[in-house]
Length: 592
Image 1: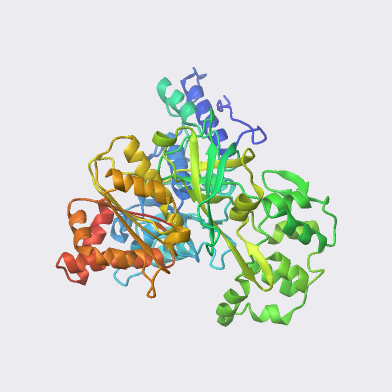
Image 2 (image 1 turned 90 degrees about the vertical axis):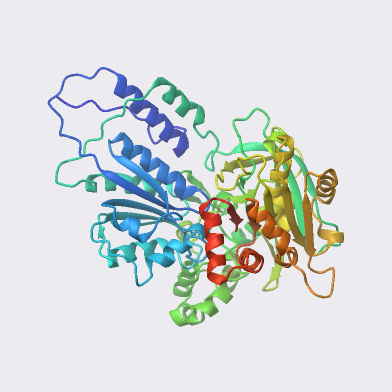
């Protein structure tokens, strides 16, 4: 008799991938509880113990790991999800089956939390992995030269240590759902001890679990954003400031959008219409020509360049294409490995418009655009509001990026859109990106130390309002810095009022250009190191938000110096102390 197959939602149905996933899971649950016709005895299910290792920066890898965990549990397997932050090469060597979902940060680097693991894996003392059967799924961004580098290195190193690769590595660009679904389908037949075929039985589900799935389904995602009304848009910096920072308030009203202090708000941006018009004027085909955009279908070239394609940054791939099509030896010379520094210098501050002006005719068909240009990705901003204090509003603190490069005025895609082309009352497509590792302490009496210069103040404004609204008694210490107190003191009145009222227990500022010698937040940490050490010994949670390339590294170095000096430790002991803070979830970083 033909086996009965659970119904599923068609790919063409008007749902986002996340919604379709939830609905299909619901259908499987309901189908499993329905009476089934008698069949011949099925092949015995081979239940495996599988470890799923996750290296995540923004939460996407974690979401995918949960997705495959649910699928494999439904198939009857036992799953253990582990962050690479907590994994060791020795523990992985003990596994028989392991799946790795690894994201890349910046120029091919592992996420911040996974760097210690990467170093241990590549150490000479790393254990053999001869028992291990594994597969790797990588996440990255093709606009960077070293696309998916950490995932590639992880896969190759496991193989080098004797691991058995059961499926070829997949390197996914920003649009991850389709390649991940294909990877999981291809993976399933390889998860077995023997040649027995694995059966995918539906798991029995309780009614309340089914209801929970429906209630918790993410209704608004990057592919299905909520169009929030702009309630307030004001500049926080003075007119005389050398930069501009704006405060954005969005109304959530009766939508299904919910967030927690510490989450990020994803803004669906669009390219500057003036730049789009200039690009279109340099193309050999009309703006109404049609191109195919994944998940969108056929759209006009104008719509593609405005809403879907990244045109303000160059990549090695784009330069390579122009070098070939324009037969340009100057561009080709930048692509040899020993000229990587020159290539980076060339890429910096240039966009598609520069190559179109320099090499007219290199793009001669609409499909060339989609083949060369990466997708225009949403911009994530740390939320600066508290649902407990601000109700059905979400606030963002946005630094507006403007600069001049190669004789052109340029700017950040989203930040200039918000500052120049969005007005109060207009609608802005958004979604929430959870950041579960960046939360206020569960213990309302636990102290907090927050380091947030510039727009890094955003989540700490949210934290302070949240703790105040919830009546938390824990002490709060904030370090804030910027260029000048007269022009760049973000949220001055709010913060000073919290300090005067006692809610902000300590408030130290560092305005770098208000004196002859520049002073930064890390200098203030060292200046007040003895008190900072006392707070740490009292169990304070330590938070950093802001620039990853310099500030976060300098703050981390200052933290180690404080522990070493005022804790009476040597360098190694101080390193162990900070590592223990990370193990105890007392050291939190939201860096970009």
